[in-house]
Image 1 (cartoon, rainbow, N blue to C red):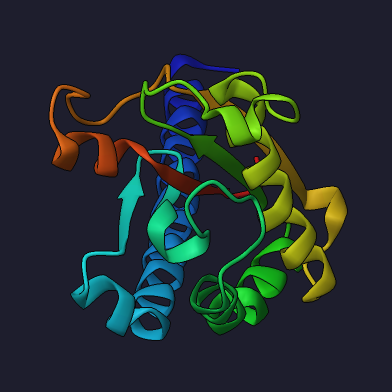
Image 2: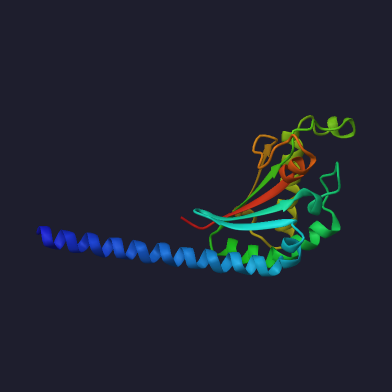
Length: 180
């Protein structure tokens, strides 16, 4: 193989790689826009935030929408919000996307009424993430594409020094990652 043919082959591979990356970006952008359209009311109420990341889409949901205080059971409004996007998430999973559901809390210790069942924020956040995963599975999302994880209080997005910051830290995030 000559240097010129090697260079042409490398350019062709580079071009194809760029086309694949652009196609993946466009697909993720369309998925993000569809999720935003479905959750417009919740987004406008500052209960949901959706953003495209380099490696997928993050859907950040305030725990006040999903759960009653001190509970791991879905609030009817949280269930309704998940139901709005369950079909889209099922379709994404059917096309090879993985969906990681990650529970997060503030740094306030678990209250006495929950302490026997959830000794720390790790367990509470994990149980909440598992509740969302179970609901998505019941709604038709392929369970082999779902993961439940907990960050507890250890991945804050705001200061825990204020009530507003603690409220931001109490969240459940869905990370939608395209197939590799």
